Length: 112
Length: 110
Image (cartoon, rainbow over all chains, first blue to last red; front, side, top):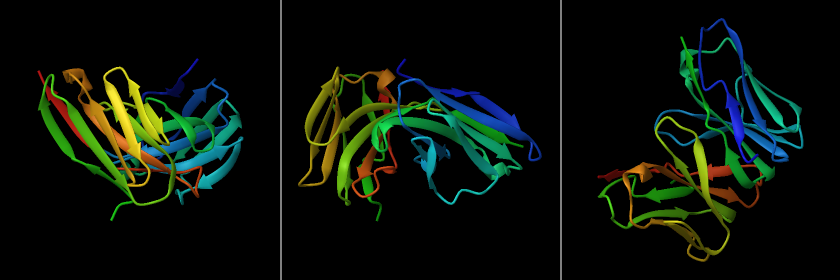
């Protein structure tokens, strides 16, 4: 298995909803990442988990809450989002931090 | 000035043309990535380079560490190559973080 799988592919949520994005890899990668990408912009790093511990939080608002239950799974919990949070959310993993990235196909989130 | 600059920003070419996309960076790096993103889609990693040249099918990537420059070439371009190509560097001091260029939007006409 050489993929990073993200679910769901599309999500529409209201500003009062609570939802979660899921990312899974079975390549034995020990670093996992969440990126946010707005239209026609490069991805922006949100969080990095290194060996299942949060190593980087790029000053992301608390309405985004990451979770890494095990080395294969990364979640992003969403609560009380704003319409400007609508974007493509990309998950990536790497063998070790910073080396050999594999990206998921993303979750396109729309906040209404 | 961005730490990673790509040129051109947009490129339209005819099917079959040889394509070159350039990337210059201003920071010390330990690796450089070329990524491909189709409209509305996820990102595919094409190459990771730390020196020299790599080839995969019709794609060739080169890097010159001294000049802090990399190029991505596509030979015999095809409409399915239409995508955004992103150069990203792994800055030496922050192994967890990569710095993305703004991307080159390539459109190959049939």
